[in-house]
Amino acid sequence: MKQICRAHKIKGFSTKKKSGLVELVLSSLSEEEMKNVVSDNERKWVSKGIDSAFNMINSPMANTIKGFRVINEKEGEIEIDFEWYKELSNAFVSITNKNISDPEFDCDCSLGASGGLCGHFWLGFIFSYKKGYFDISKWTMLELPQEFVRKIKTIEIITTKSGDLQLTDKSSDSFLLQKYIGSEISVRSGEILNFDKKSYEYEGKETIYYLLTLKNAIVENKKIPELKIRLSEGLFAKNSLKIGDKIEIKGKLIKDKFQGLIVKFIRRVTIEKLENNKSKTKEKQWKIQSSSNKNKSYIVTLKEDGSWTCTCPQFTFRKKQCKHISESKTKS
Image (cartoon, rainbow, N blue to C red):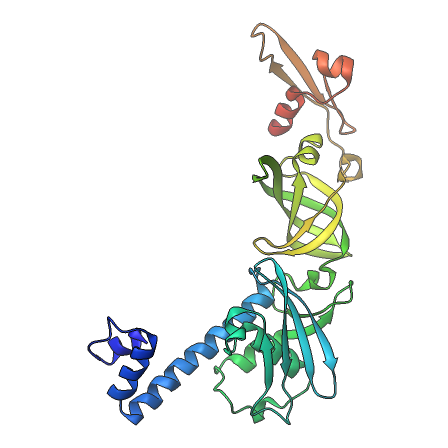
């Protein structure tokens, strides 16, 4: 309201509360000016709500969509389950040709609960339109952005492997994976493009993990240009993973609030064997200086079959990968 006062050069608004601001605006603006104010703000509110809906379809958000449910096909009644500040919440939407001038809507989010048309309403609007519950040319309640009809052409309803109904954008990079959200998937031949060490603290205990980006991973016989995975510190260290390694994993595909689509809950990592490649690796050797004795060095060997050996005591007697092998792998 204060922005409206500034825009129309209305004086005396700085000390007034909401009710006083409303009175001041109503008494200061002509009927024509009020119509323009309502129209301008209406367009902004509609655009903001629609943008929020598209963000929830294509991007990770705090209120992640869990799924859509058709309650009454005949009456076009649907429910949307979503996470709102870590709590499972719900929205109800019913838009048909019968009630298109006054659709039914109820939502648990703060804006929806106060009567506003939030992003969840527009999600229900898109879902209902894609289900054929109403003719969009008959919609006159609010002016839709010019590009709206064009943007929703690439959106479709899918059923995930776990049975949930979701809206997905065919033009997005994540389209191929949408149907597997909430399901365990197998990932093959994913080449490590980059990784980042992360940590968080819970009840005084620090947990360290790694976020990796895989390039050209094969998921259900489909090549995914980039795929994020989360690995425990133990699995990452056990396999001495580095950029360029091709790995195989099994895990659950999750739509994370911050990372987007990501594979979590991975219990095992398999590094693709070199003998599966068309050309075998020629034997290589590195001379690595001992960190405890500068006068001593160890020989690390990468054999033709892709296995590693080291002349240090840890590898010779315990057959465990040593730091000299790890150092050599970064040089290979």
